[in-house]
Image (cartoon, rainbow, N blue to C red):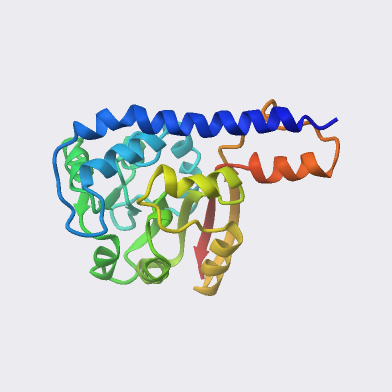
Length: 261
């Protein structure tokens, strides 16, 4: 029999945990360097702290990044004449991994704190708005472009413009890798903007695939990431438990890997 009471208790505990995290971070936020944004943008130091708390941006996992190395080699990217470009490179963990593998890569980020951190690691990182930077690059100058947890921070119009510029700067048969939050998980869909108000757009996997195909990309693979353990899910004993498993315990992230035609 479906343990709805147990599931509801788990949901309530999850919401309580979100509230506790918010309270626990109040003091840390107050200690950040004072800044004024002068508009809708949040202060840069605060954005760093938000990304670190979420596990995206500063301090991304090395294991996740290593899974992308075969794709770099498949694209024959990472040479001085065909480097990798990482959009929204954060603290530079992906760039550092590529460098450790003897591969050439550069990053760009709009957050000056993260850029300074990357430069202290002797990584090639440019401080600029992503779209402005892409527009200043020569056509067909990169063999691979990556964007890890960038899409959710862009508005719809800017996202399309960024995809168009990625298409322009990639060489023929070059690869793009996009990783972002998965709104198929309803906890993610309802809490993402609340947990981090710098997020502006949750991109459904099918929509992400459609946009890339519409811009002339050939889809290679879409993978769901950060899947919950089987112990978290409800027993498969009916349509209700199946619905809850699919929408409340779906993977938290996904990626799309595509090749320029």
